[in-house]
Image (cartoon, rainbow over all chains, first blue to last red; front, side):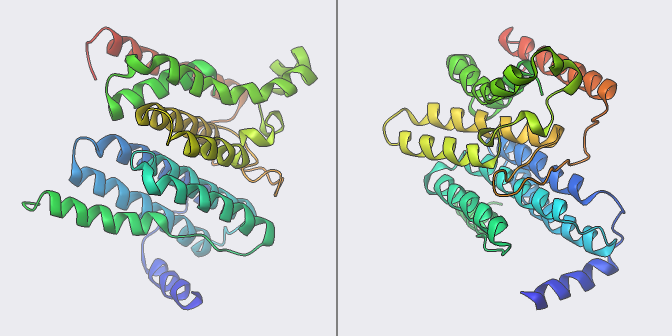
Length: 142
Length: 155
């Protein structure tokens, strides 16, 4: 895990990232989740785009915090809480079994904060892969 | 955010996601407003001083944070097997959006009682006057969208 973080930090250092509040970037992922939920009804392509944006923003908030030395405990909590709200919004439309996994992830987040460890399931990443596969199976022309 | 905004915003989003939000207006109203009942102990404590003290992180009990979301989601997760699926999904969406909007727009302690650290996302204004203007503008916009929808003009 540390190797992955070091590799992404190196990549992040080379990207022209803006020096904005990492908390705001975390919060934006909630807004893109709402957009995903709305567009999942109308357009598969736009829905995937907003889901990718959500995951990208989740990645960028950590990168920005580390690149500009703005890593704080408050930022860590904002990041985890934003992720849970984002998951809840995304999975409410795909209730079973995703909503139950979201509840599990909320509990794991509380335990992670209490024990100062980090053990949270990457549900949105798994969901993205399955969503794209199911989308391409349903719409082969895409 | 105020309860009017929560209801109007949730109504507009539910209508975009599910269609026929008017058929579920009671579910949307109850689910949107229910969470704010957790402010009552704070209101009873500060009384008329709420105008000066406002609804900051201290106005929330644990039920207005992630702890409450886990509780509400678990109850809905059980009810999913006994009640109409659309009602549960709409109710869950309204409750999560309420938590998410309050988290986005104000100061909160998302992991209370595990952590008492106050979190503010810095996206929307928090000054007394700017937040008031922001709430008025946001509520007005969602109000117009709500009116256009029930008048069958858009959405």
